[in-house]
Length: 264
Image (cartoon, rainbow, N blue to C red; front, side):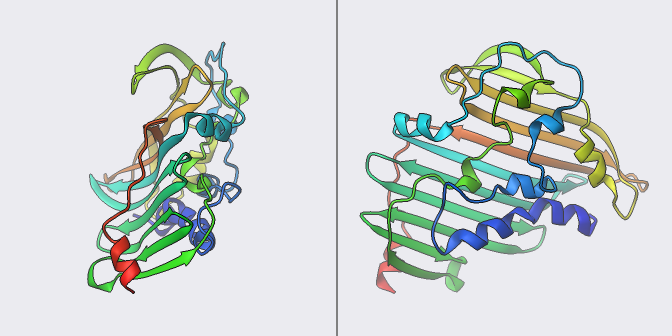
């Protein structure tokens, strides 16, 4: 895979590393925007015909999640070449507002190495951190405040109904026992075409962007996948995934490695 495509997938982790020392923050930059060349505008990514009549997207997701009491979020950028994963960046974030606990993890890897493996856990006024894995892992424990909601793992590209203006409303369905409306767009966006400048003249052939929004306007799931082929016949797939789960039922428990942090 070209260096440019690898950079597009992994650049968002720079934002995360910059904020790790102080713990997750609600007001940090959005790596989805960085991966998208800085726009982070799903409306701009939409382009094409559709019908989003009735779209209602909550502008204050945090308020809904606080009211629910807890949640788990998942954020991932991935690239494959001929079916082999060449780069993958994943963030997960679990928040329990009632018990004032959080658990956050970040992992960045290529086909043959792991560039980052990081976790934090916060409970009872203390923040535990693990950097690295296995015998090479390092740990720390510091006093810290409860800071729920890492933007890097809870932010979507869809911020309001305007962002869905050119998606197609495909009706309602059930997702994790919650009624959601499915919005889809398949026309290739301009920002994807701009990322096709690879060393081997990659041409995108398929694209699909799907968003699930619940009755409160909370984006429960968002993701796109693009497939392309280069002049040598190699197939590339790029994908972005965001998902909320266990809203109102997430229980953040102490990870096994926290004992190692205390010992050190």
